[in-house]
Image (cartoon, rainbow, N blue to C red; front, side, top):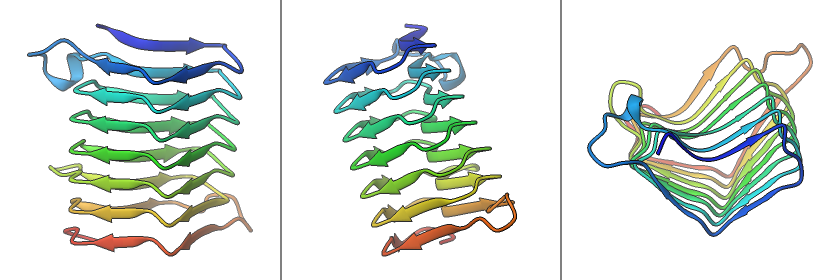
Length: 174
């Protein structure tokens, strides 16, 4: 599989209850993306099981909901770029290189997720680069190389990143 499900300039789609994996035996960079949302808005990505793929991505994609998905053995469980006003809730990301990484994005809510065993040289539970006005609440980040990575965030003057009631446990660096 090169790509599992691709949304390209697609709005208001529902991607629900799928099992998505890549071909066995390929190195991570040669695996395909499980879900790719590109210039796609107001989509629901819900209750999907992803195993041994490359990434689940949302690029230039806003007002999407990623709910109750599970990703195991991938590179980026979830990677956002230029993606605003998204909701990431009740997901389970275990044994991936990176749980969630957000770049150049604003006004998203990340809540009630489990990110565990993101390890290796680049292992990150939640990474934020050049983002503004995020709320990160009630997530559990456990056994990651780095629980949270902040890089130039918040980005916009006067903006905030709010952390509430997260559990940051047994990471090499919290």
